[in-house]
Length: 220
Length: 247
Image (cartoon, rainbow over all chains, first blue to last red; front, side):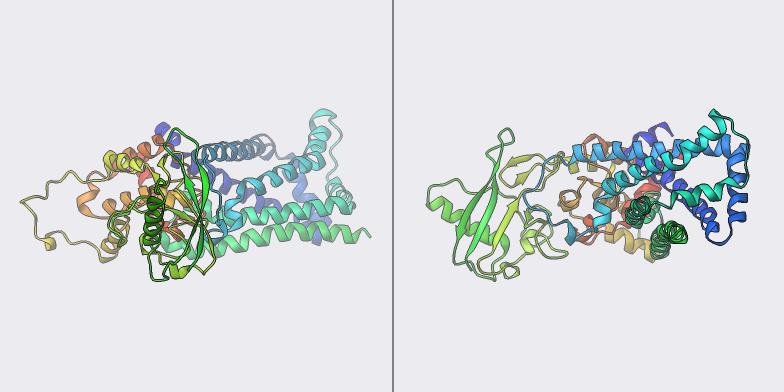
């Protein structure tokens, strides 16, 4: 096991595992957020459950944060290693002739997603932690919907969110199938994985954009 | 054809190289790319200049010796060919052609367009073989039935000529298509399965030691491979390594 993680393939495998974990979380996050479009009550109920359940708060949340940090740190580490291995640059390269822009620029789309996450944490997670664990304010099961709607009143924030989600879609368009290939997906499933990858990579970010724009327009 | 060639010139591995420009006339569209370089070298020798060093051997797409990164692509602007199979008809009269060596930390330039690809040899020595003595005591082929799909996949993997185009074209200089092909060609056949675990571990470790990068599944190697080696071989190598590491 120790030797496996030390190999280049082991590191890619670990990177892929963290990616799949984050994609499962993203799907769950989307399924909760989309309820805000249909029903404030359902959204409040689910958010209150996620925000107060000890299993979610004290076990799943730390695992999620560790997964996010691991994915970014490992991504930078692998990028550093790869740049070291290919340190001599060609005078002329036609990368577009044999690969997609998304696959060649995962580090850049990843950096945009990282900057989005910083904003997202400032917007939602830090105030939430402050509310519950610093100021110990009384729990209000109906505050979540109002907080969400309030954040999306600002069109600049909605624009930045949407741009970030476009970059997330590009990241996922390569990352979804790549993570499964890194874990050794058999060629029998390549076509199915590609289709599922396209549905997920476009559907989830488009859904998040829709939520942000829906609340912006509802506030007008 | 009249061409402008921008060729990487480098005296040896210790010195810094640079692009030099050469103009060349009377190139027939029917010439191979290497024949065009022969014409250039004859001209340079006649002018008392140092000819351009480049690798070549069989000149029929089998040996994997010829390399060259031509106009931004390994083996030039065509699919599933080596540089020796590239013809000048793929270019237009008046074109400017960039000719560079395959670049990777693990493929240091020896001179001009010649790179040291012995890292591949060392990976092969680490496990790219079977220890069964097949000399003089060969069994009847039908004694060990092999699934047709496995036999075909093993044969496809075995067509890898080890040219290094996969490394040259990969933005990470990853050698995983080469190693994946070598691991696959043995792991799919009963003769190779006995040593499958040891082989994949040793070959992957040697690949890492040589300083190749990680695979990020861009698929560029598969597109530029002159033998059409599939990315599926990398996935199989990954599976083989997981199996070997956790058994």
